[in-house]
Length: 120
Image (cartoon, rainbow, N blue to C red; front, top):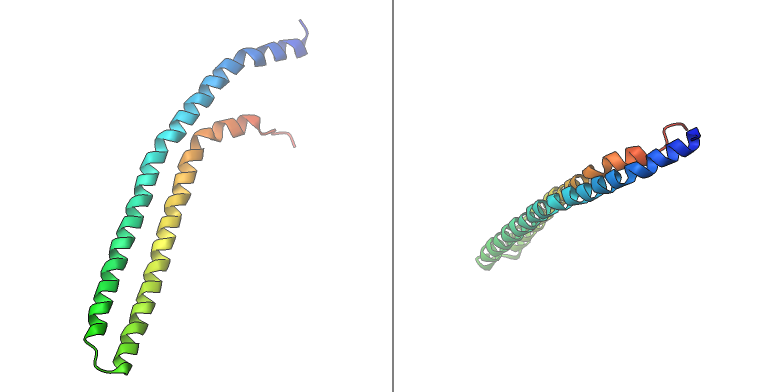
């Protein structure tokens, strides 16, 4: 048997093993998804609760104001605080999505190494 035929035969024999590895990688990838989605949902829930409480506090403060100047000051402080909280929470949630994507793709790293040609 020639070298080319031998290599082809060896490659065909290893394909069932590669198929099992692929199935195992998909299973490992899917196992990380629920935990990631739970962390993201928890972060959204925490942000929503905090936002609701901050808004309730703002309305309470605003309802007791007697002057327009004080009302504008309270509104400005609330807007600044709400924006800062939104940006911080958005970055946190974005990082959770990034981590989820990285964890989901990690099991497939070995396949990419096998399929990427090394002699460029």
